[in-house]
Length: 131
Length: 306
Image (cartoon, rainbow over all chains, first blue to last red; front, side, top):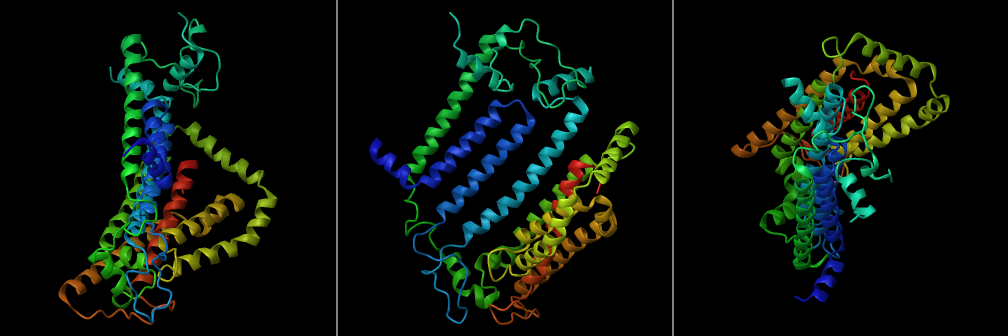
């Protein structure tokens, strides 16, 4: 696959491309930021990227959302799109909410204890208070 | 040779300083030592900077940037080889999904097939998810609860004083608007909650809306008003009760399904509101749990108490 075809595919899969870029933004934020609060926010970026990727890869052109409009007619698998990606994303969203709350609570406790959000300073002060 | 300004800015950004400060770090002769009580919510100069030497630091950063770039390129190349967006072969319907789609309405009774899957077919999974939410709220309460052991009397007095200030300077406009909006918000939340088996929505979405309504109520009328009907006892009773109700319903369904017994929960006519057996009670239980959790997150982060 040459570079032109690759770029065309990236354009055709633009939602997946956007989700990859969002994921890398979150990863860079996790790696480069020393601020714990920004780290938690970056983790939220990565979560959103995964959800965007799953939902966009579950989309099929021309198929309906998996909600049966007429229950009298037996549902056909060729009419509705696959309901499993939506279920997976729902699970992920709840876990990401819990994780964000837990991470922020830990961050707040660390700030109250050590007076800083910078991870290096927190480590320094923790070592100092141990000595 | 002078290092370019953008590189100094990048260095400062990667060390956790604010990127908006244009003055390069090299010009600061003696960086002031940060003190805990004087620099709230600001990351001072990192104390570990001298640990590895400048070469080591730069190498680490170059390696980090390089690995992020390589990761991005590999992922983008993978995306280029994925099937086209919206392609007919995407998310292929295998035998499991086919069963979910074709038999779901007859077997479980909800017209929303996603609800069928997450609450009945894979209900045990979603029960674990509710437990994660429960544990998250419990951990937040453990970490942030303000009591006489972990907070000085002065800080507690400050918190109380903040509440007092809130009471005195309460916003009249917010109160009036909330009086008008609250019934609509509650109705909307209940609609989403009880229509989870017929339309997009369900326990998690509806519960979030109800929790948002509680938060709005707390902002507009003050915490005493909310505490008059939603105190610790109600919170724990609703939260644990909802989780236990969910557990009982899921255990019953699994027991009945595994032993081939007839299910006494009526499936009803698909498409009507009282249908789909255990899905409606489970949605209500999940919604109550989520509403409690959302409100607990909000109030424990702000005040350290319910």
